[in-house]
Amino acid sequence: MSELPVVSIRRLCKSFDGVEVLRDIDLEVKRGEVVSVLGSSGSGKSTLLRCINWLEEPDRGSIHIGGVRMGVDERNGRPLSARRLASIRARTGMVFQGFNLWPHLTVLQNVMEAPVHVRGLGKEEARRRAVELLEKVGMAHKRDSYPFSLSGGQKQRVAIARVLAMEPEVVLFDEPTSALDPERVGEVLAVMKQMSAEGHTMILVTHEMDFARAVSDQVVFLEKGRIIERAAPGKFFTDPDSERVRRFLELSD
Image (cartoon, rainbow, N blue to C red):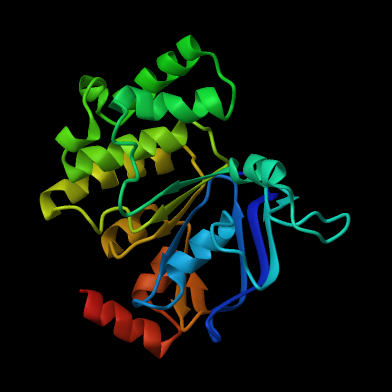
């Protein structure tokens, strides 16, 4: 793994209606690392992901993706133009809880759309790449189907293929299995585990403790918008420093 962090966050703060949701977050993610972000509901986990790709604009602090500052022109401190912001945001890919597939497009078209219209990839190359990715996530047989006909697990695997088609530097997962029936969770986690083995840089917000333990390089625990513990999974899950983390893990068993 390269020593240059793919994601670098410094003193990140975010408030909603006067309530501070993120407080002085510092985080670095190196190329090829998998970072799991854990915490109770309302601790700021999803807001952190949404700030990383500028779906939420932070109040203070800085975020760099691949050495480039997100959202702000470092030469003058002004907000980036929409076009420049879009080009930097494309360095990230986000897998949401609710899949967010385009209902009027087939599975294949969903995966092809952004590479053609955002990256300018030729349609034949985009099609070839889309088929490869659908095969990788076990969905090539559904390439001509529409999202309404898919199970939740199938939709999420298509959503992952769509993100990978843009070749992002980091993939953000916001509770990717929370909307799935229990029997569908394993098929999505298997794809994510394969991504980890292939060296994709990933930041996960998840309640899947066994999965986080198996794939993570570091685990971060948020409490009331602050990072109160970070550690390698071996230490985090067996000998955490924080009493709050110990209680959380006991309740998660």
